Length: 260
Image (cartoon, rainbow, N blue to C red; front, side):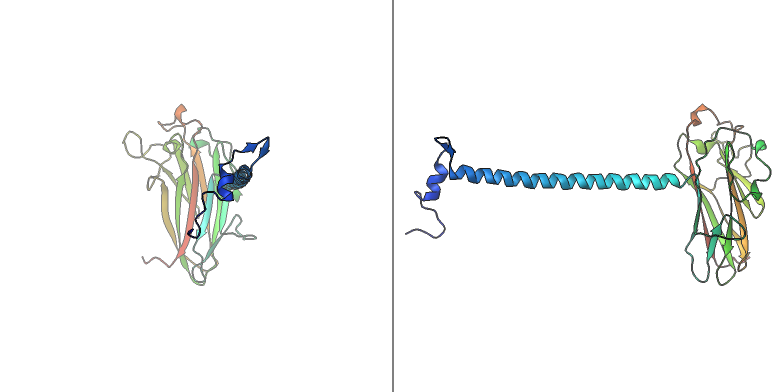
């Protein structure tokens, strides 16, 4: 008595499987079944390879797109943070706010060589928008209180993407409503503050400064200008800084008034 599912030793299928692939130049049934399986496996493998290649191409395209967007952000970007109905601010390149935005950028890459701060124009705080020079970045913009009450504008200026330690010789001048300060890193030899164009040292490893403008009334406008250059009189300014890169970002946040 045969058990169900158990193939007899001399069944048609058993005899067919034991036959050679070809008999007299003709393929046997087992050979045909094996070839069909191989074709199916090949088709499946081909589809898998195509899917993997498509995924890799898509990832590369996304990375390329992100790189393009990143490169277009330029060397300086400013943005406002967390706007709401009570404490809200907006940005513009002109004091009349014909157009406004939550983000502004100086999208021209400035190729700097060392220069002395004495050679900077005297009117840098009075030209709207992007007004870069041959060896310096300059950008003037305006921040307006469009909220429902008076506020304080807290700002933070940071930098990143530093190569060749160019931050050691960079100078950053920040005007806030006409009042300016020059910022730079401390001396590399541990001697403290630099002698040339340095009112204040950087507030952190990647932080230029942070502060606030208090009592900004509704519809009141605050003017900011940032100027960046490589100070040629800095002792650290040498050929090792050539081809160095650096990028700056500034955020401004509207908050309740600061109690005196």
